[in-house]
Amino acid sequence: MSAEVVVHIVDDEEAVRNSLAFLLSISGYAVKVHDSATAFLRHAKGLTSACLITDLRMPDMSGVELIRRLRSENIMIPAIVITGHGDVPMAVEAMKAGAIDFLEKPFEDDVIVNAVARAIEMIEKRPVVNADVDTIRERIAQLSERERQVMQGVVAGQSNKTIAYNLDISPRTVEVHRANVMAKMNCKSLPELVRMVLSVGDLPQHS
Picture 1 (cartoon, helix red, strand yellow):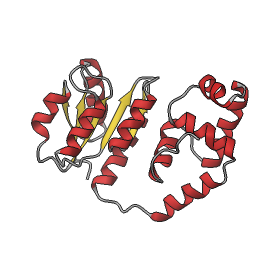
Picture 2 (cartoon, rainbow, N blue to C red; picture 1 turned 135 degrees about the vertical axis):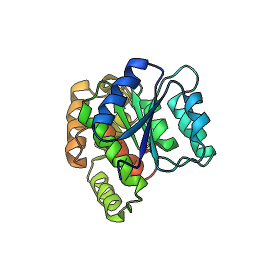
Picture 3 (cartoon, one colour; picture 1 turned 180 degrees about the horizontal axis):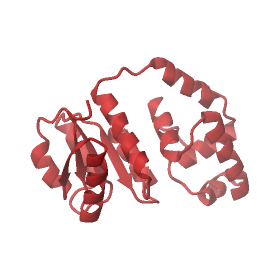
């Protein structure tokens, strides 16, 4: 299947485009690069067997805006957002708009390759198993109220200091709760935690 899917890379930085294109090409994927969201949109109509890797911050149109534009034109291809540290709230918005993943720079080669593999699984219309969502709900139910509050802040992209200030607890206590959340949710990274939370519905609201 990977040979049939074209991976479209949208990034305004030539070095990033070329690096990702080389990596994915030697991993067996067909790749096309675009220097802007606008350039990609000129070729996006009718795309089906394709996936998108887009930078979040670009001068002509952000990755969030691009994904929303694709959805509005009923171009339903899986999208992966790559983002710099500190852009987590925007990346979450991208996932709520329809992105399947976001990756924080810098990331290892295997991380992006694995993300593309997950995108291809979606193209193959691999069914979503309801039991997976039920398992995530069960894990969330095991969190204490304070752990839920910390998870809410983490998923919203807040720093430990901000979460500590908002909850009137120490940053060290936030670190402990955050570690407990990651352990109880059985996830190893922030993007994975965000995917889990979004899979069961919208982000929990602040009380």
